[in-house]
Length: 508
Image (cartoon, rainbow, N blue to C red; front, side, top):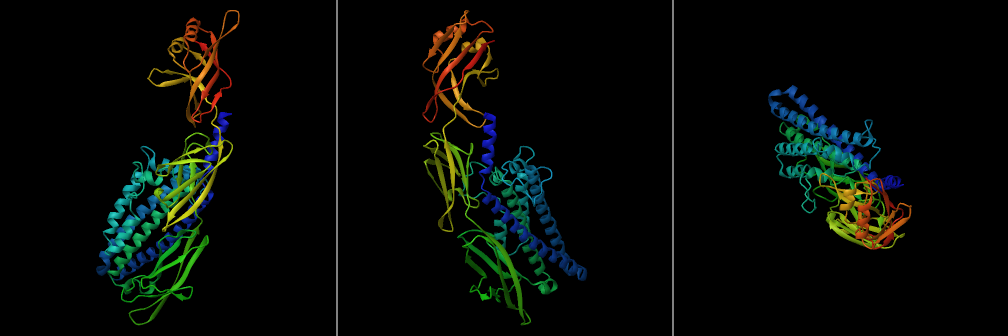
């Protein structure tokens, strides 16, 4: 029965990761993949133009052509490494037939930890070093200081200073206990950032051999959103520009047929509904020949509902009168920006998204409400209801030292007489592999049998064995048995209980 309860509780813990959160990660990942494909296609066009220009004029183009090939090699290396890690995490989660584009166990909290952080075989440190190496090399090829800062920020491996990491390094902060869907999305974002950095360098290299040499007939409009996923009620921000535009000749931008009044191409709108949306419009500007050039654009983005994750560290229930460990997080929001409250008990923060929940009434419900401070305002992200139960009865035991100096717990069966004589008291605890909660024994009774089969009870009104009980132990021959019964114990909830059953002890 205890094993069955353990399986059920673990299943309930897995279900506690909100499906809305997992769906949100899937939407973000899909959107990032679309952006990455578009960037990859654009970059491929630049490489093809470099090939044509190199064939036409190798003397002029060789220096920039060679640099472009270096950019391609280093970008593809990091991009493919991230793809390899995504595939390994999904296979760890779903099995050898797992596919990145069809994740089955999106809520799996162990796969990313195993692949990225396993001692000796974890790839997290390798990824950390690869990102650092790529960032340092790629920004050396960017001349514009603003773009250098953007690329360095996108590829940063620094842990935010306002986050309490409890000594975690970057890879532990990013991937420890991270759901498979979230870990894959993080790696997809890295791939998107790599293609963005690659494109910025390629545009700079192309400018060195003249815009007309490569891009006169490939001039396109670009939309750079600050984020492609927005929480309902949040603000969508995007910068809209034309590639290689002259800063003295700003383009005119139209969204939905209306001109936007921004000389820097910044567009903002309040997102009041959830779902998938498209930012559609066009840019107009004069080229060097005085001709009006128009380029259409479309940028997809996703608005998701507010979401949060609250999980009980031990199980999917809360125990009355007990300090239940809790973890609370909201994707994209630092732990110190969360406001967490509880009804039906007390909630004590411990830092870094950790809390202690102590519900009061058995059989009732405890509701935990999570709010987050984003964009200068506090927004409720979700409510989570937990059933409140009484602590289960403990199991009595006799503690003794093993040969290595560790502690063993005898719970019934054969016991060496020397061990029995050295035992000082009776202990009790909920110790089923999931919980480890000590109880205080208040009293118990030992029952011995004489040669005629008559029961001889001896009572202790504390956890310690009495002198009379010790004397009875001393008189027992090998193979004789006795029972410890009527065990009274009190737990951290302050409730005293008499344990069912008896401990059967046979002197060995």
